[in-house]
Length: 232
Image (cartoon, helix red, strand yellow):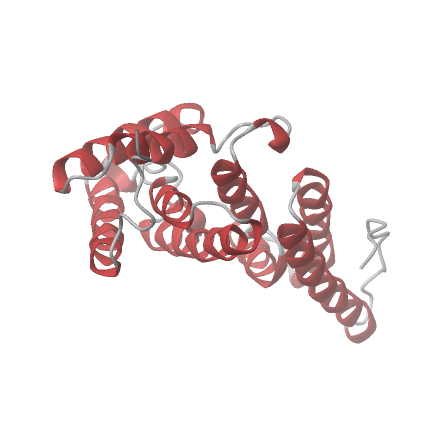
């Protein structure tokens, strides 16, 4: 009995079609909500931000999968669908809702092997798992590590600084907000398991640490705060 999953069941054209579907689905989710929907005043609850996050995660997950020997197509397709239901479902059920959307899409478009579809949907449904990443399949782990990594580094710092404006904070709170990114990075390092993800995390956190030091040295009255003890 042969292996059901082909080496690369998803062509580049098909992957681009998936990206377009995810983009349009997110946009439609926002448009269907009355008064802008759930917490849309935060940028990360907009369709634009969510799609950008998904693209970031897909690129990071693919990079990790390539280095760690995971099935690249399972990983990158799951990454595309992992937050597709984020804007229409509550946080605690968005992963299951996303898996349903992914399953319907993959079954309706072409003859993907059923085992491939189930691996993708299992990764989407499991990506919010809060336990040990050693307990999930390799492809799911690559997705989860990428999801953690997108929240640290320059992207995470920018979002936290944007949050200051939405919360009517002053620039003097910037050091505190950047410190939160470092704490998030520390949590990411404690959870990731692959050497690839850990290396990316350390590199990103080093940049955030530099930015925090620049703030403290250039802004008068900016009190230095204790930083997480990270080996970077």
